[in-house]
Amino acid sequence: MTNPAVNVHATAAVIGTSGFLFVGPSGSGKTMLALSCIAAARHCGLFAALVSDDQVLMSRHNGRAIARRPASIAGLAEIRGSRIIAVETIPAAVIDFAILPVKSPFEPRLAPENEQFSLPSGDFLPLCRLPFGEGLNSFEILRLILPQNANFQGQ
Image (tube, rainbow, N blue to C red):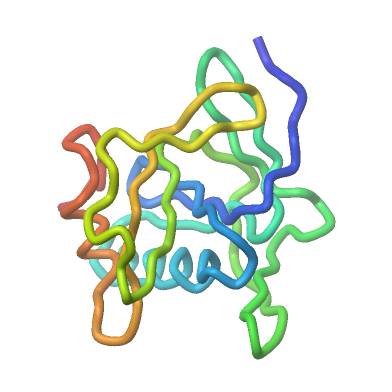
């Protein structure tokens, strides 16, 4: 069963066989963090692709969260402070985790346990806070903090 899609302000990507919804307020670094993780994953020989930037059409299908790109912005991403760029995207992906970019100083110092991100459907995704910034390899941090069931094929 499929629910109608709802437009969510986020960035969606796939790394390996796991789908990620980068969430947070405007200007929080969602796009840059997603693009950085995609580039690092590809450098490691993993499949990685952007689904959509800034607008993600979220729905539920057979109990899974599905992200799709709106046709009007397919293949585009905004580099804040620079311009809109053309990027390779895939049309849709199953989403497994929500990622919240966090920048120093880190408050709270440690994230609450078992955090969840509420989807418009009323369902939830596990939420991971991902530190980013100069000198940090956010992709390697992501690999360390994700639950064991995250699948980065090619590790």
